[in-house]
Image (cartoon, rainbow, N blue to C red; front, side, top):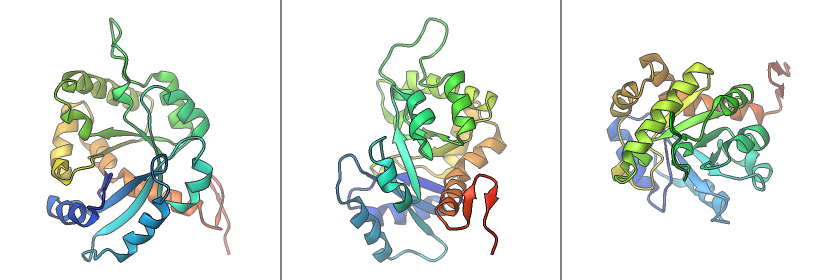
Amino acid sequence: MKVDIVFPNNNEKEFVDLAQKLGWDGICFVYDTLKDKNVIDKILKLNKLKIPSQFNVFNGLLINQKTIHKYKKKTNLTIISVNDNARKTVEQIKPNLIFNQENVDKSDFIHQRNSGLNHIICNLANKNNIIVGFSFQSLLNKKLKIRIMGRIRQNVKLCNKYDVNMLIASFTKYPMNMRSPNELKSLFINFGMHSKNVDLALNQCDETIKSHEFKKSDKYITDGVELVK
């Protein structure tokens, strides 16, 4: 199931309507625990949305090291926007998903991009089952577009090499900046992602939410072990 990720601002219904028209099977609304104390109320309000049949709505929270334990069991997805300290995030905080790594505010190296990922971070992400997300919204920055494109291409290559799960989504605050799954698929194939991996990346949000929800249940003991009644 292809699920887009967005950051609403009292425009959830508009996002739902457009996501359905674009061909998404569902949408994940992400709220920021660092800036908003009413995130749980907003999650609860999602139940009152008039959702079309066969369309799914999920919730996610932007968290940090201080808030992850408070909110981990209250959301479908824990997310961190990293732009300078990805290693600490994947090694210690361990959210479900990281994104924004290409926006690290540092110059590129002479022979490679300073893309926010490296072999150490990718190995840790693989070990801790953390997804690397790629944001279409980041490509709409005209001043940095070429640099961001180069960094995404490098990070796709690193994730392929170290077998890191990838996710593709809009990651936007504005419905007009959403794109269809087919458009994102074509774009990321051009970034070096294999067609099969692109399909997995577009479905990764749904798969991760299912896994995260199972780990919140009484049946989950540890990875690979569950309680059978």
